[in-house]
Image (tube, rainbow, N blue to C red; front, side):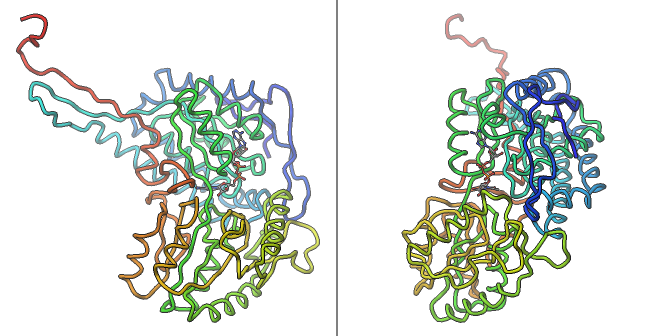
Length: 491
Ligand code: NAD
């Protein structure tokens, strides 16, 4: 495990020599001392990224050459898939099979953006028809500069890949700060980039706290763009900081996403997708469908089956075979989720299943999968992100009521609907005020499709070609093509 920051192609100790502990959430043991960057380190990292951007190197490189580096990083990730997946489990707590999927998706993300870099190289300029035929005009897309990327802890390497891969493909240079709860695989990404021969300064990795390293990044005047994933309160600070220098900013924030189940849905499939929508990754998923609305005639049946299936989920250390629910990421998150369940009870909700530490697991941040019913629509449990394996369920009578309840939220990240009636599913999908909508499923995520939220769930889109646009500026180049003098002042 690494003990230094990755800056300007070198492993360097933080200027102040500080570290902070990272804890295995399954055992509560400290597993490593992570280098803690301060403003001085961020300054060095930004200077390196600036030099790499402003010189003749990375952004000027043919995009096809950049694609080769991205593919080499993808190959480096795949080569170490097992090791990286295990690091993710001991750092974050997620089950190993999920971690393997994340690492594979991270590699896939670098490969995908390598492909888009090649497309960018093949079609660099777009001819524009302007209204005066004495002029020709074209639009070109250029890398926008130095990116400060700040990410959360729920998908540590994957969230890094979602930002670093498109930014590098576009020709930007990056200063990446992982969450202080999960720094291990982000540091390994530095090693993989070095092995891939990535030029110095193109990718810099500074581990540290939000208050020190994070704040120094968002305040840094030489950064051109802030790409942030995390909570709404921090996102708001990031946007305010960006406003001072008119930095570009993209935000991927939280959610309280609804899942509408109609009575004609297959009950077994509905129950399985409800579970995948909220118990996968211990419910620590920004797009988790944490509010389930079930059409009244099948409400009791769905709930009974859901509780029965939740009881059968195997809980334990993510490294153990067959485990489907690991511990929550940290003591802080664990206490927050327990407090949210307690507050829901106080507000009048019923805990239909779970809500406490599983028997026999005395150490580790373990929580039973939790199902809340009779949750008042004005309570925090119904309205605010809990970010744990906690689902709120309630019945509805009509389609219009379901849509109204679904959209009654300050968030708008994701929404899901389940029905055998295709026309109805499409109608409800169109009515959702959310950036990601699933029909007859919840959560499957593809690198090729746009990702991002309406309302307070964010700003801009990641993934797909939209993810690349995040890191490009558009320049128009207009030429006076006529032989005639302009003839305004002189003729
Ligand atoms: P968080 O906002 O606490 O932290 C996110 C990152 O911001 C961390 O790296 C943290 O160190 C940093 N940070 C904290 N304070 C900062 C400051 N003042 N200046 C700069 N950086 C600062 O969020 P979290 O608890 O790590 O992650 C959970 C949240 O992330 C949830 O709300 C979840 O919904 C959201 N999330 C969203 C998506 C998405 O794609 N929309 C994906 C994953 C997670």
